[in-house]
Amino acid sequence: MGEVLAINVSAVRGIEKNSINEVMVVEGWGLEGDAHGGDWSKQVSIFPVEAMEKVPLHKKQEVLSGGYTENFTIAGINPDQIKVGTKVKLGEAIIEIFHVGKEIFKESGRPYIVSREGRFGKVIKGGLVKVGDKIIVEA
Image (cartoon, rainbow, N blue to C red; front, side):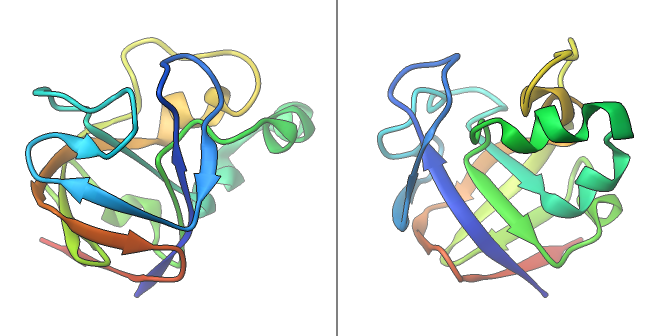
C-alpha cells in the first residue's frame, strides 16, 4: 500500500504547481483549482517517486531541484503496477489510468521524468484526498 506524499495544483498550465494539504477531486473533471481539469483523459497526473531510479545520473540534480509538475506525488508503489487500465484509489477518489508518460518527452527539469514516467487518468469517483492518505492499486 502506498501513500500520498504531496498534492499540487495550478490554475495555469505550463508552470510549476503549488503544494496544498488536501484537495477535492471532482468526478469526470479533475482537481478543484487545477488547470488540467476537463473532459479528457489527462484530468489528473500521478508521479510515483520510485520512478526517480530511472533518471540518468547526469540529470538527477536538475530533476530533483525542479518544482512539482504533477498533481499527486506518491510513494510505496512499484511504478510497473500502475499501468493503463489500472484504477488507483487515493483517499476517497478513484482515478483510472489512461496514459503512462506523454507523447512528447521534455528534456529538462522535473518534466524530464514526469513526461516519461507520470501516470495520467480520469476521475471515475470523486472525493477528498489529503497528504498522508493511503493508496490502493486495483486491477
